[in-house]
Image (tube, rainbow, N blue to C red; front, side):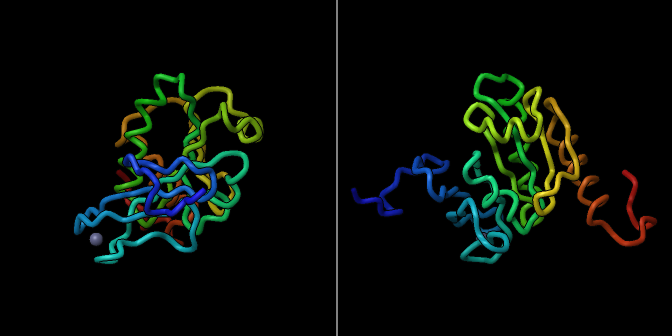
Length: 174
Ligand SMILES: [Zn+2]
């Protein structure tokens, strides 16, 4: 039973082992491929040029606390299901948002069929359901698919409403 991290098949996604999943991502600045763990302190940066990397992870009932609630960045949670057509549309849009907002947000995908406790806890009645958590506290929620630019705007507005400038007058209307 040898599980060297190097020998794990990485098909552009996470490995199959349940423990600490690793996401491989190409740096948008220099192109270097980086391995990003699902849970870590701080936020991931490129090992080569130090640019912030998009952070995309998967979590379930067992590791949601570690991966999502203990994250130092706000977390965009994608509660999805394999049988859900709109989920397959919204998923690449969310990854776009995670790339655009690298260093500012972490995307955590939760398969509701594999995570019944989370589905109950967040009262998921439709998929996809999207949540934004700030240190484990939900600050925004929406259901249904939306294009990347609308999702990006929703995330931006939710983050600035929660974290944003002390003086609301400095918030730029769009
Ligand atoms: Zn880089």
